[in-house]
Length: 235
Image 1 (cartoon, one colour):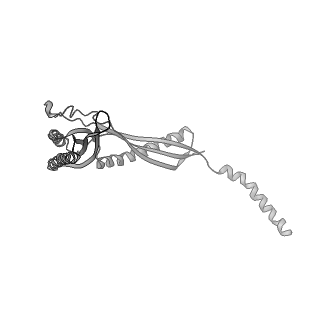
Image 2 (cartoon, helix red, strand yellow):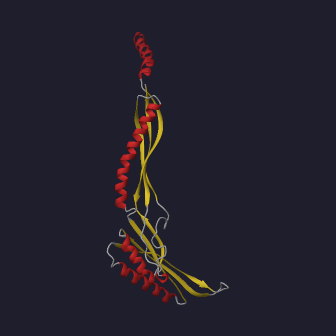
Image 3 (tube, one colour):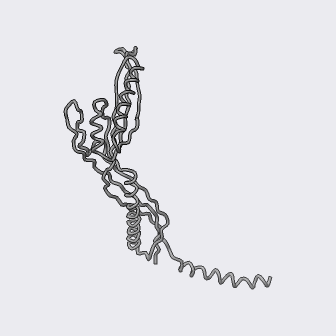
């Protein structure tokens, strides 16, 4: 029993000191911030989708005709340096009579996709292939290497912008400093729709006798967003 009485003053002294320690501890306010860095990046990659389409009563002959058209176009495209080729979608469907009861023919469509950083070469090739194929789509994009280089630079800008906003928020709250709790970086790109800002191929139809026009590839806005949380230390 005497031993317990001896410890009591020590416990009381410790409890008495807690309010003073709590007053000395720094107080934090946690807030969320958003910052962003962006820039316009010129498109340096061109993609063209061409297609062959035909109709025939014999599905076997139809498939053979389509295949020959595609193979001929592929062979010519592969002779152009710097042009990447690939086959796209291919499908066929029956064509019915007016009553919709009997199949009278088959219709098939197959795509050829071309890609190149040499806009002039790809535009000439696309125009040359219009004797056998038709254009389904043309669009411009940013090459992967170009995008990565731009995003690496923008990442540093976004982090810097976030830091500046954090300092501004700290001063606005009357804080003495802040610490970073979390930070999330994400990227995005806003591109124009196909054919927007592209003056090439207003009509590239050889039968109309229209020449290939000059290309305006346009650009996309690439951005890096920085979303994070800071804790502002109050004096």
